[in-house]
Length: 97
Image 1: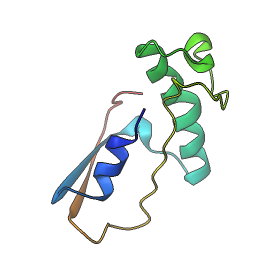
Image 2: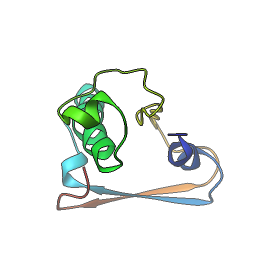
Image 3: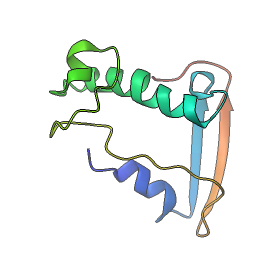
Image 4: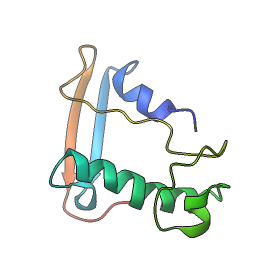
């Protein structure tokens, strides 16, 4: 709800590891954002019992204004942040949502 995971990717840690399952890889930026909002967020909201339309229906983002909205923050790394180091680990199986 606060964006703390997103913020910590960009600042604060000397080394950040991104462990990414094959189900998170998409063809382009637009399909990645679509997937995050309409696949991952509703499933995660449902898992957390959030009081949001996507958690109740479980099928898509409703761009709600709910105080329980979990998809408040989006971070895109176009290149490695200046401070710290990043490593991407691609896993050949589905991980999470």
